[in-house]
Length: 271
Ligand SMILES: *Cc1c(COP(=O)(O)O)cnc(C)c1O
Image (tube, rainbow, N blue to C red; front, side, top):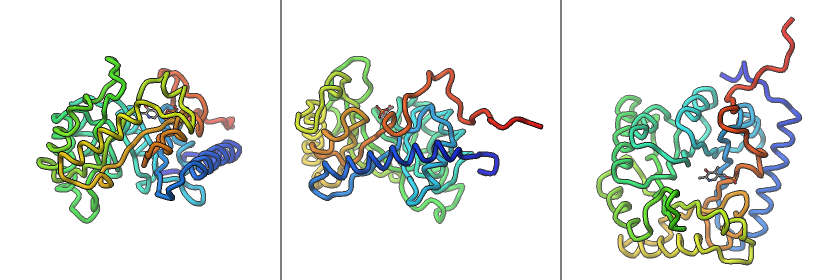
């Protein structure tokens, strides 16, 4: 698997320093002492970057990807011990193959329709039936994406529609675990977020979560909040986030999609 992939030690050191710094910032702002999950968002970055972090001590386990094809390729190249999160805009017709073909897909954080949930359910069911239940012990986690900013170009359900979708998953998708709610939020609000300010998107997601829990008759602690990215993760944690998704601060600026490579060009000169 990884024999053909060489981790550049200078790059590995840089990535480790970056993620250690993020972890320290999370710890500094996390007053409740609850466990805040850090997803290293590796989209458009080479597989060797992921391998560098995953083979470190302690290993980084949670990685987030946005593109179906790219995740497929990376999942095939990289160890099964990685827990993949699909966090990007998801096409309905890609849901079944996504859930069926990537056994270590751990979470899909961007579900905004019953059709997508149903197709993920079909895919995960097919995988369990094919692989046998022993190798797939956990349900595939699903988060409902909420459009908290009301921007037309943002995906996600309206806050008022979140409960119905959550209920659908609980009642109709036995191979999926309803893990919580996710938002991206407006860029301007995100950039204005400091550890002290209250980002309206985060307020909205938290209120939506509380209302959904009440409507469904479950404890609100059962529904996680996935909110916070490079520019606003500290503010998100202050507001009660359980999971932050950080890319640029760990991996640096992303290349344009057309220039991104899963496998880097080898730097060694062939003899
Ligand atoms: C790209 C992306 C992130 C990471 O963004 P950064 O600003 O690079 O940290 C987080 N969440 C989602 C849904 C994304 O698409």
